[in-house]
Length: 154
Image 1 (cartoon, one colour):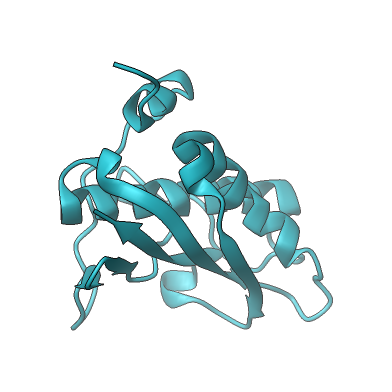
Image 2 (tube, one colour; image 1 turned 90 degrees about the horizontal axis):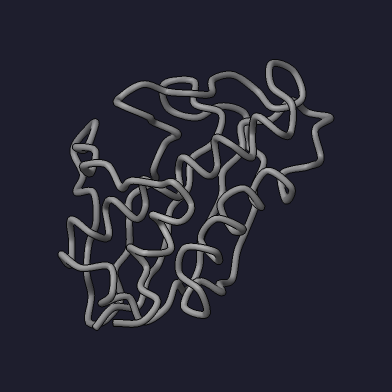
């Protein structure tokens, strides 16, 4: 068997956690045809937020990148819950990265690289994606980053 997503994840030292349950009245993912859309994923590790507050005030860009990576891992957890096997991913189409930011913070795109770089490593060619990085005033539970994804699946 060749290079698989699970092998790449193991090489990165990443174990996909159980998918987080929704925090309100929504579903964690929805599928329409071959497109799977995830709800926004927070930087949760073992059920706890690893980054809270505003980038540029409470956190630096490096901490934001780690938070974005944690969100990306949680996206893969939702995808795995939805389709059972990450090898059924045809390609990651787009991610939208929301960064809770102070008014003068302008490195949302660098924070988003924490997710983009990880997803490209984990998914290989299938991980090349379009992206938006958006600064926002506040996110649920005071999370520093939230990311949603659109994934084409088999």
